[in-house]
Image (cartoon, rainbow, N blue to C red; front, side, top):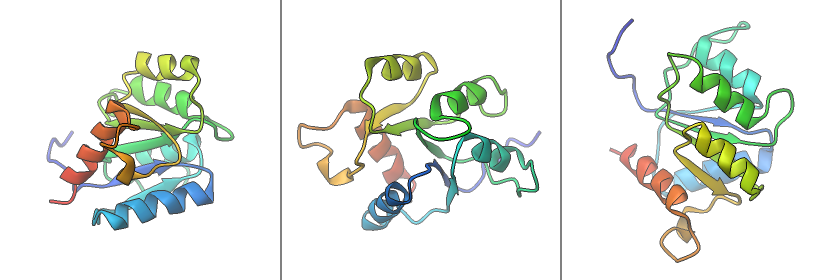
Length: 147
């Protein structure tokens, strides 16, 4: 197994087209020009990561951004699958959701999520008192991808 670092990329696992467009807009606004792979649910994401189901295998992403509420395989189920797979256990995963349920937050924390962001995603709000440390760490990680 190769340990050479792959080029930076982001995997966005989201089924809402408006949310996908919001993420794309925010990345452009902050000049983060790395490949953005999009999967509509957890199963599609696993197919992309593993190169299954006639999907080409993508480079291991620098950041994975996952919506919780999706059809077929939701975000927390995907996160469980990633954390149980030796190849993907260490992925830098951020949950993006409209849900601010404490049960969702606790489950994400148990699964070693890097951050939990309540949508809508807007990087301009970071540092203005309304953001969370979790969300701010995503912003910093994205800024590192600009290099």
